[in-house]
Picture (cartoon, rainbow, N blue to C red):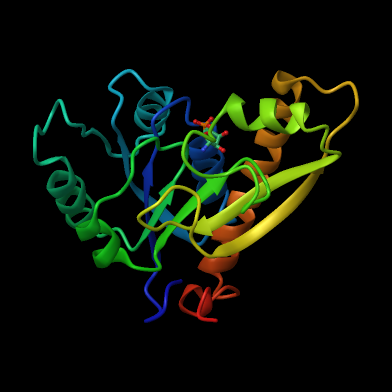
Length: 207
Ligand code: GRF
């Protein structure tokens, strides 16, 4: 639960395939996460994420600069509020959040990044670009980071991390697939711990 003891009502934002979204939905359905997936939003009308939400009976909305020209952020915020969302999960969401969403939700927005931040993060470091850079640098260890989202990419305080070994035979593709499995595990475990009150988000990044 979140402070105040209310049950988690998750709002998940995703732009692509939605495998992290599916892992969260499955964990909620299995009772591992004490909460509900209240809403899924994608800026991509043909995303796998929207289809997965619909297949799972979760409210799913396409909100983008095309559907809401000049009012995308307001539409996002009102949809999240209308569905009583109290924890936002970014799961492969390629757009920055605006100031009104960030100030409304504060330390209730998480993001997953497929590397050990602060390394291999920031503008342009997403998807296969991350794994290509790690292979190029001949790193022997990579990993996954769950962090609080802020106005920039991949810069907010870290909530959880897990290391993933890089094998000499790894390609960017094989590494991406290996890391993605660990993303699912770490995101689900982190949200589960928040739902059980084992992680206090208000204490994260307070120095
Ligand atoms: C993941 O690699 C995640 O780390 C990155 O975007 C990808 C999302 O994958 N932010 P999926 O849409 O959850 O399958």
